[in-house]
Image (cartoon, rainbow, N blue to C red; front, side, top):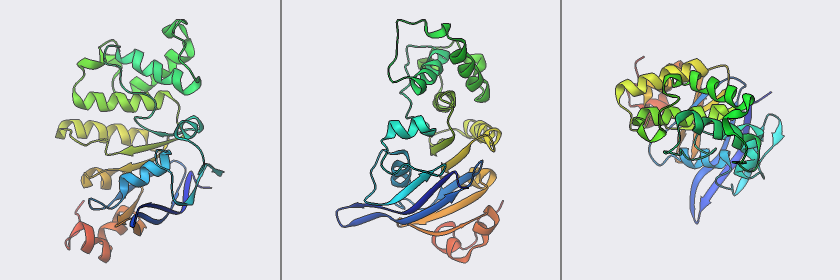
Length: 250
C-alpha cells in the first residue's frame, strides 16, 4: 500500500513542460524528500499534490483513493495537508488560539465564533498536543505577531498538526532560517518521522540527507532517480547534474 502515489503527472504552461510525467510512490510513515536545481519543478509538483494547481494529465492516489479531481480544501479534509493551507497566522491572536482555530477549521466548514473557542476540550487537547510536538508549549499565551521568524514557521507546522493530518507536504520549511533555527526544525521533523507520512522539499542538503528515508531527484520536471540517501549520494548521474562530481559527504 502507498500513502501517496502519482502516475505520470504533467503540468504545462503553454509550450513549457514544468512537470514531465512524474510518477512517485511514497510509503506510509516515510519521510520522502524531493531535491533538484532551481527551476526543476519541485514547487509546481507540490502545488499539484496539494490541489493548488490542476494537472494537465496524470493521476494522484492518496491512501488508495483517487483524489485527482478534488479541490485543495477537500484534499485537506482527507488528511493531505500542505503546512500553510489550514489558515494564515492571525498575529493578534495567541499562539494557542491560532492552533485551536486550525483544529476547528479542519473539522467544520465555518468558524462559529459565538461558541466559546477554548471551551471545547477536544480542540484544546489537539492544540496543546500540537504545540508540545513543535516545541511551542511555553509560548502558548504569546501573541503570534511577537514570534521570531523560526517560531512562526514552527507555528505553521503546529497548525497543520492540530488538523490531524495523515500526510504533510512541506515546501522548504527551513527557508530563511538561521543555523540554530534550522537545527530546531530538523530535530522537530525527526521527531515526527514515522508518525506521519511526509513529503519534504528543501534546499538544505545536510537536512535532507539527515532526515530522508528516500530521495527523489527532479531535473527539468522529470524524475531521474529515486533511492536512499546513500544511493543518491553515489549515483553518477545525480552527482553530475546536481550534487557535483564529488557528491555530498555525510
